[in-house]
Image (cartoon, rainbow, N blue to C red; front, side):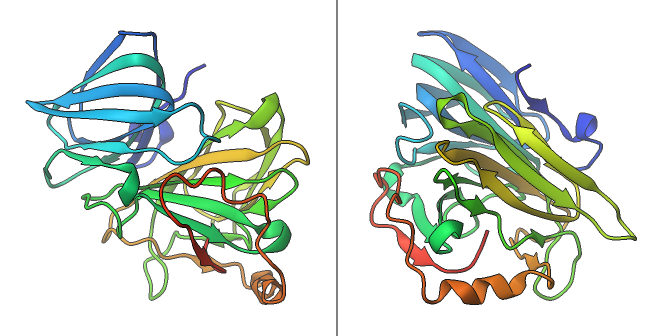
Length: 278
């Protein structure tokens, strides 16, 4: 089943995701309503139009072929997505208060990071994070993890409004190279329990309303991609808190190098190296 997550069917208030498959010259239309939208080519290219504005997305062959340009479409717009030649596209959404301008985020503006080290090395493509794109509530990025590595590790959470942490609902959408498996862990507290250990494959989604999430585990031989879509009630800020039982793992990265299999074809410019993060 093609993912179509809304705040209503997720049982929360802000984050959403829709995956659209388009044949060559095929067209998808929708009214954005209360949602701001970022259109992310997963495979292929397309033209995005909305209320007289247009972005020709160059896209990419697959999520493992490097980062991509994206388009931001504001709330209260008539969005049209036309396949040229078509492909698979993610529509990352968030309930928005403000109507901001339509924008095309070119590939050159996408910030590519290499995070962690050793078997915790991963690549993060930041195309709709607060430092790259102005939006009302939506935060989105994508993470690529070489086969055998763990990402979203140490486990972290963002479900309390306090210094160093923000409240964000989160959607994980996965694609796995060669049709392989991957695994996702989510767990909570006594006060707010949640307990997920799930095998995921291409096209699967995991919803994270609260709790510690991680690791995201790439099985040996099978590179892992996931798209993160986040939004919440407060300021648009991506602040996380590590599980204190596992935060010490970061210190072990000091003497390790970043996995030489990274970056995945860094078309978006020279990546930065950051030992922290997700």
